[in-house]
Image 1 (tube, rainbow, N blue to C red):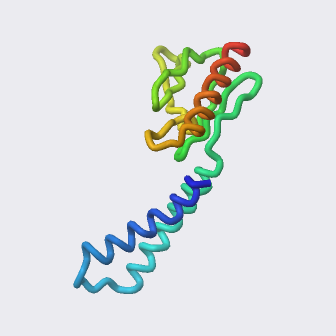
Image 2: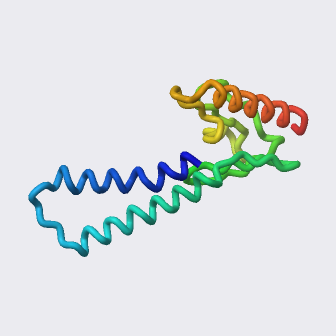
Length: 136
């Protein structure tokens, strides 16, 4: 919920600050300011919807990772590992040679997170690793 709220309010405040601070004394036509605000709101709405849908979905044969800008579907049989870091990555074998990876955005732990949130995210990461192990 906080991600969704931040994507709606943050860009608007940023846009207002840029207009007020950087362009002080410059005449901006109302049409240009209006179009800029509409574009910022459209991008904010897109990110708000993506933040609301942020998830890792475990299906019988694959994992779907929904991030802010894109989603990926990874077959469980190709998964190599989940890195153990504050910004965890899912690594898997590509269809051709080489490995691919994607950050597990829903499992990222910001440094300012509350201890209960950190504990919950670590439990979710452990459950995901166990689930991959039992289905892979």
